[in-house]
Length: 97
View 1: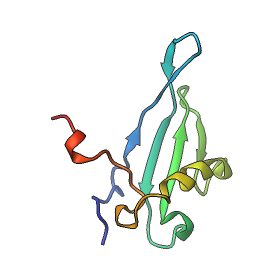
View 2: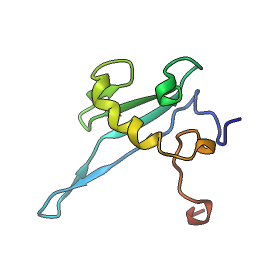
View 3: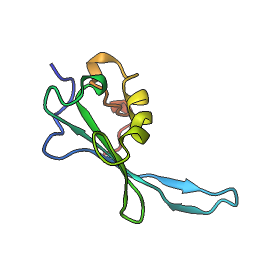
């Protein structure tokens, strides 16, 4: 049983930003994580990872363009506790309503 809601219809997206050595901030990549059908890729627990650059180009997507470059997503997310199904969320007590 999955510990979290299924994101199949609306994959979670995580925005990001960068900070240069001179402390200037800029928009970073958008990261998407989409739960796929069982059998999509058991090595990554049937998740699809996609990274979209600030200019709108797709840097990589699991099973698609530049798939090998998305290895870092799998390496990190597969380290989550099994009951979390590779999803990493902040503890509920840190949520702001």
